[in-house]
Structures are given as C-alpha cells and as structure tokens.
Image (tube, rainbow, N blue to C red; front, side, top):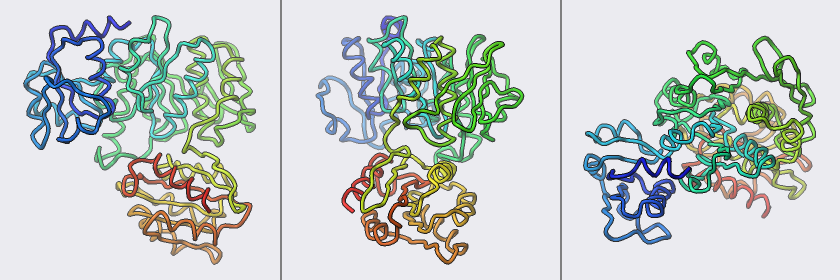
Length: 457
C-alpha cells in the first residue's frame, strides 16, 4: 500500500511546516521512501532542529523565526502540522497545495479507516476498537491524535489492514476526505480560544462525515444535544444512532446492568459487557456502543467483541484508580477538561469527598458545573488556576455548612488539604474541567503530578 502514497509525491517540492512530532514523522517518511525528494522544513522556533533526537541532513533548507511562513510559496506542496491554522497558511500559499498527514492518509486509505472524533472519549474508544480488531485478526493499527502519526505506519499496512484513526478537531479542520466508518462520540464547548464559537468548532468536527460516500457509515451519539442536527443534515453515509435508552430511530441501547443491545436487520443482538473490568460510567457505556457497532460493521463475531470489551484495561488519566493512600481512594481523571466530563465523573464516583478543579481559562461556560457542585455530597472543592478561580467564586456562595472551597496557588499545596480534609474510605478525585496548559505541558503531566502527590501522602 506504500505505492499509493509514494507515487503522489513524485517530482513535487515539499515544505514540512511545523517540526514537532508529526513534522518529524513526515521527514522520516521522505528520507525512507523518497530520499532524493526536494524537501525543506519550516518552524517558527529557530532551535527546532536542536531539540530533536536525530540529525537532519545539512543540505535541507530550514526556515525559522517570525517570517518562517514566507517560505510556503516557494514549494509545490506544504504538509502542515495540526497546530498551525489552515487559514494562516493559505494566506501565504500562492499556488502551493496545502495539505496534512491526516488529509493525505484519508485520501489514500479511507476505505480501510474507522475514524473517531468527539470532545471526550476519543482515545478510549479508538483504543478499544483497535483492541477488539487486533484480537480478531492481529493486523489492525491505531494512529492519529493519540500520539501516533499515521505516516509512521504506512509501510506496515496491507490490503487487509484496518486502521483506527483518532481525529481531533485540528486534524479534521484541514481534510477533504472522510473515513469509511465515522464515529462522532459527543460535542461540548471546547477549544473556544482557538475556534471562537461552538459552531466553528462543530463545523471542524463535522468534516469526519462531510465527505463520505454512499456505502459509508456515520455512527453518532443520539443522547448528545449538540449532535441532534446530524439528523437534519445531508449525510451520504448511512446514519447509525445509539443512545442509553431504546427509542424510535435508535439502533443501539443499553440496560441498567450495562449490557448493550444492537438492532441488526430483524435481530436484537445482546452483548454482555457488564462484566467489563474497566470503563465505568454512562459516558463509557456510550463509547462502548460506538465501538461495538463499528466492529459489527466489519464482521467481527459477537463473542470476540464481548470478550474484547470485558478484557479491556482502560487508559491512564481517564477515571484511573491510582490506589489507596492514608485510607483515601485516589482517582485520576486529568483528561476531563470540560464541565460535562467532570459532572459525569462525579456521577460515576458518588463517594467523592474531595475534588480538584480548574486550570487554564479558555472562556468555557461553567454555570452548569457551578450549579451542580454544591448539590453533590462532595465536601471539599480545591480550585486552581484562572478557571478554578471562576469555579471557586461561583460555588462558595452556595455551599452548605459542611462544604468547603479552597483556592490554591501551586499544585504542591494539594497534599496538606487532601490529608487534613478528606474522610478516610472516601475518594479524592482530580477531574479539573479545564485545560492544563497554565501549570503543565499537558493533561498527562498534570495527572502524573497528582499521582505522585497521592503516593507521597
């Protein structure tokens, strides 16, 4: 399958725009499969080449500094990384074709791809699907936003390979192709600092199905209020709606035990996944439904799907049980960067006594969370960062006599409050409802810092 994409670059001059993980992957692709290709690199950081772990050939041009985008018009094609806005690049492009790894990968391999997007649950659902597929055939791949650039896997693909592609809004914003099976998990207010409005964010996400063809499939969460408009859009793929409860139009639903039912032709097929070892909560049950349907569309047997779900171990930083320290049960849900995710975590863990909230303020509406928190059994609300200040100011005026709100100025001060205020046998939960980019590089770093605090309590 490498020939499909390799031939596309013949005789083209190419600029790799952005030299982070994906840009480096693109460089390695050309060095391996097109060593004689005329390529160049552009990155705003003048020290980008100094930070990598491998040598870049000296003859390759490197553009950097505040005017690095001016190099774009000198090349036939620009392969940009997701973090650089497409509109910014197009303004400088001239006759250059602007594309991305995601767009190229979808262009050449879309028929083998199960694409997964949504504000929350992408990594869990993508990993679960790949786990089930690999259990069945041993030749499936997971790529995309989970941190695995798709070009890294091109040489390993065969005509029988299935590719699970986790797709962020930034990746989808650029594409002109959609996957054969598209999964839209949910949509909440997120990345408003980048998109400006929820509608702009929604339109970027909608590209996961916008370019589908007859015979494709769109699997979507009918319980998410922001996805209701999918029912009214002109979608070429077959729409498959799932929800927690059975109702007209729904193809999949669940029972109170957490088992899943699929309407398939004239049959009602049951998947006894309530025995699963991970993936607690209703939000994960919805994720499971999308994975089940995608695997059934690929002909995976019911028993394989069921055992795959029940054996799946879950991912780090997603309602992850850290352990019991000083009698307190710790859960790390650092991935929760929107209020809806935090609310769902609290519903899933009703024994939560202390919760850590806040981080970078991206302009998200916190009214729903602020109204919800004082009504819970949680006694201690520890808030941090600018988003935490908004939550702190909102909740403290409505707290009951046995509830307390704390505002901290550094992460290390969590230890004392947690140990002094949390009731033994109860839960301390990190579920911030905010981005981590004020104090941490990413949510993973924040989650690891929280786990270290728990272990050293």
